[in-house]
Length: 467
Ligand SMILES: Cc1ncc(COP(=O)(O)O)c(C=O)c1O
Image 1 (cartoon, rainbow, N blue to C red):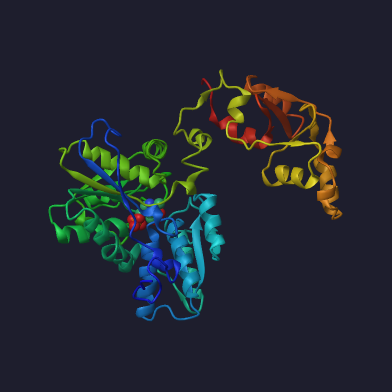
Image 2: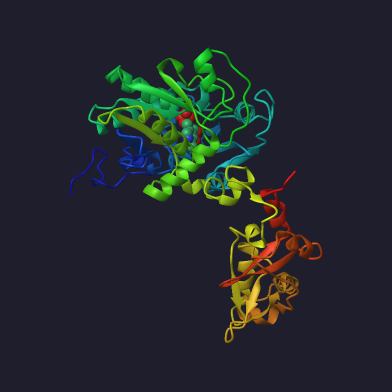
């Protein structure tokens, strides 16, 4: 068998770190945008082993910190991250034997925070709605923890040249090679600016004619700074990982030839279309990049080639970009007129489950406890008819006394059903029903789901009242 330079058989990595980089580029299907004649290529950075482009810079920054003596064996990495750099650094820390603390703002998806915990980090969650000068701002918190912890090193990705170099030495050359030295425009958003600056520097060194287009969400200061040289007031935006409220030193505006600003709703809609129509499952910033790339591409001839980046994977955003309820909550999808809304509009994306009377109490507890289907319908196995709703108090009693739940039957834990709502009933019937009880059943064509006060707190925001 052939062996690699490290002695391992070809195709076998010595560690997960060897799997970073060499991501594929995929051509957007012709006709995806009828007004685009030229080629649009997507660099699928979510196929890095940690799920994002940030794996590259995590490894490069750590290796450089080791080389410069900033990070020593037994040391601790402390970083503020919107999630992806955190995940990449955790992977590197786990592989190379460092401790790690990640400081993350609370607007980030719960999936990202859970992933960082799973990778062994101590996680500190900070409020997102604080000024950058506030001591609770995530960058300030990370700096403070690093200062107060012996042996700690703060990569400070926003101002670290090694972040930019990570892309200069890997992503840039890969794109150049995959394109066979032929590309006209490179389009990318900036968070720290490392991706766009590192890649742009490399590409322009190869061919100064390559145009570089930056992309920003509307509340970020970067596009305005690029245009005017002035730092404006930042505003809120929802796309994760891109946009800034201060000018990061990892970002080099001199390398950028034009800027596009893409509304959050358009970024999310583009990501959803891309997933549904091409199978490329991008996060919100991938949608933003593509929306900008298509704007650029519409003005180009057939022979031109536009390259953009899909920084991370859509699965991290199932509860946001890929949830219609979330999109409606934040008005990225039209709200439902209150005059027409039904109970069905309140249970749209709810977990669904029913339990048969001869199934175990352990199973019923899992459906109600883990999957949060409350109240839980219990059906008669033979007739398929509704027997009752799960008696949670009695189940809690059994759990408290350490009973063997595998030997108890769900059917012995059924309470009489008080209310069943129909999907087509007006939404205010649900409000009336939940005035007295915490949760009620809702009849579906193929079973039942539950509706609770928590669902009303969430779902009633989606209704549009005539004012
Ligand atoms: C999802 C996502 N997209 C894009 C970016 C932008 O990359 P950069 O920080 O290199 O500008 C980031 C950075 O955190 C990100 O997490």
